[in-house]
Length: 84
Image (tube, rainbow, N blue to C red; front, side):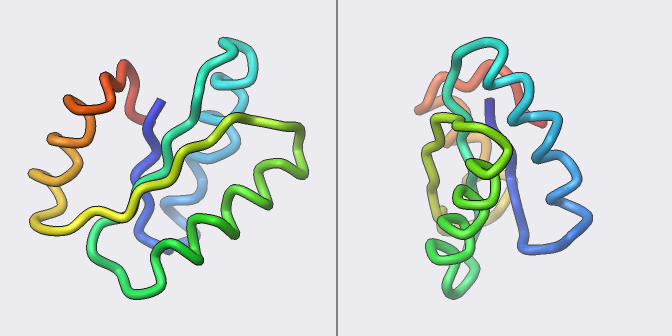
């Protein structure tokens, strides 16, 4: 399950739903951000906040390039089955 984030509160609205699906399905939640300074620190903070609601396996990625192309490539490479 992939949740693309841009650092906005609006994008984070997808997190509770995605985390709930990942917990119930016993699968990994991928959090990705494209081309943002300090993106890794932001994503690690998101992971900490998600864990407060119950543990969820997460993988974070800061991608470079065009957002659509970078996210599409990540979906293929990581074999993502659902984007929230």
